[in-house]
Length: 327
View 1 (cartoon, one colour):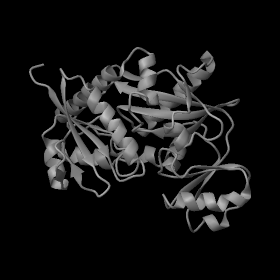
View 2: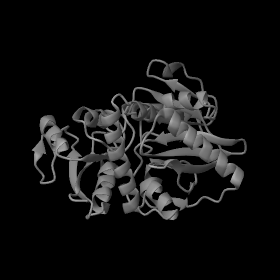
View 3: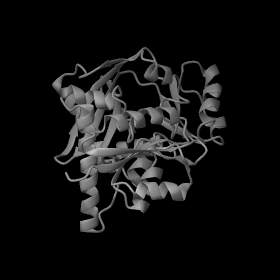
View 4: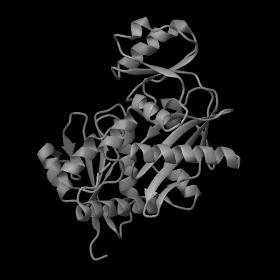
């Protein structure tokens, strides 16, 4: 390779996952192969301005210029205003190849209600649930233990396990602080199993299953406080593993995802039940997806290289082919 590729590593954002996004972006920038790539960190601040690698503030036009100077982007903006297709749209407008899902898949995957509808249409079980808004929530009738979650939230912000009807109003109020639509799902009893999925040069494949062993809800403090017990690969029999992987691949493909995603399930006695899909999962070296592929022999740096080169190849194919949809 005569010249190293310039890789825009995008972090930050205006969602509640700003700090987690910065951690992912720092991890990616530090792990890039220095013989192949030059990292160009660009941070979207909570104030909606951008910061370049030298700490200078950029407006949107400046950010577009910085992006246009790069060969490929690795968006690590988790949550709304990033993972939901917003940053994918910006890269599309700039004409910059990027790692990860496009506008439609990002928006669909970020919306837990839409994801449920797509999954059910594909024959994938989901927890029975109802969509509430501030208008309809006042008529909601308690039906037993439930999990309350913002429809477009991430990192478990606003998620609550409600076992007592007296606590439901407060849980809904907290969720509505983050979103104007809230999902109330029946409590599902089962093992928590995450399946990473990657779309690489050789097609779709899964990484080793990740089991999360936790007492109660896998909430923000447990996720990022270091108390979670992650078992990789998850101890599963061949039948359960095949069912989980089939569901994960089917949903990834059905939503039109690209790059890498993490599909989260509850493994019940009746089989897999979808929890959610993350089209821009956490991506530090200690996050579930990199740890999963590392367990299969694909290290963090090599995983990033595969994702970047696949994105560059996809971008070139779209230019040559003309009209391919960047999902």
